Image 1: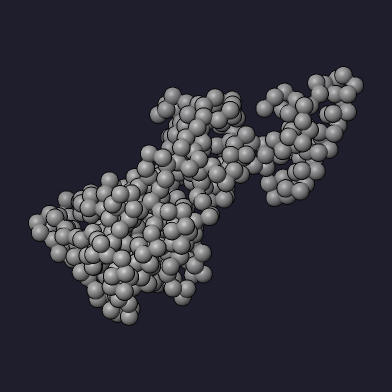
Image 2: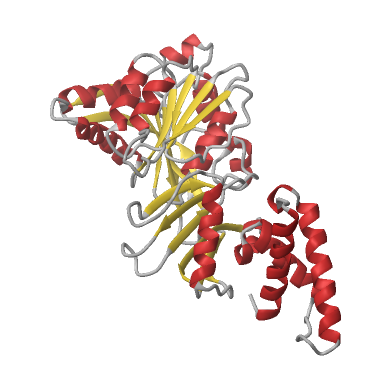
Length: 409
């Protein structure tokens, strides 16, 4: 922000303090105050007291953004093509469009970066300081904020991951080429049958988007309870309870972990439990919940669908020494019905590369599973295999053969 804009912004802030108004709650008032101060400044500039503004309209937009939005980052947040924004240094601000990163012309100062982070964290009630140098939070629009500060990093590091509102259903994923129509109908049938679905993939492969799309296929009367580290899922279902973890206070008390949330969720009469992502010992609590007959979904970082099963069989061992793989592996085999693996190719395109169905059996440490859909020549094809576990389909009055036989290789 140049000196002229800074001067006008300071004038508006002084007037706000004097009048005792809240611009964050009144965008129209913010616009009016900024226009008034820009006009006054321009009148002074015509008299030679201050340098002239090059573009008054642009000046108004930037000042309003700095007062009510997130300053120089607001245009990137408003751009529907931007998927993610990150700051490596005040002069190194990047964005990602269609999976491809680019260095922007946005230049900040260290003070502006700190002020932006402070403003972003205001609504979340979370903090970042030397005692807690990492923070995850949700912005008012649902975007996910992650901040790391020195001395863990050399300079303040900020990531803002936006979530597309354009992809809300499986049909949308078909339209953009992430799924084929046949695979989407199979997944829709799995959701309606109450199958336990594990969504796997690398960072930014589209796991959260896939979870949202899958949940859009659930029946309207279902009560869905979601638990996440920070709010990311955005469900259109009419009966949803969303919970997120809480950081400890300055005194080190009051922390609420993902494990605690999963246990609390089971007391809330869920028809379906959704864990945003399992990374550690909370995977044990998820398996116990699924083993009780409660339909569920979750995501996990993994390089393939089969590796996702291996990882889910390993993470629960972090819960304690008394947890044995002899219990975990058969439980994963019996609980997980479908694994959907998402990937992002070198061009930034996100798509489903494989859909796997465990048979319910395991041999030693290996979970038996059949690939229902696999990528061949860049296209997801039905392999001709059918899910071995049919009880849930039968109970729901559904037959996966109706979909799978329509295009088996």
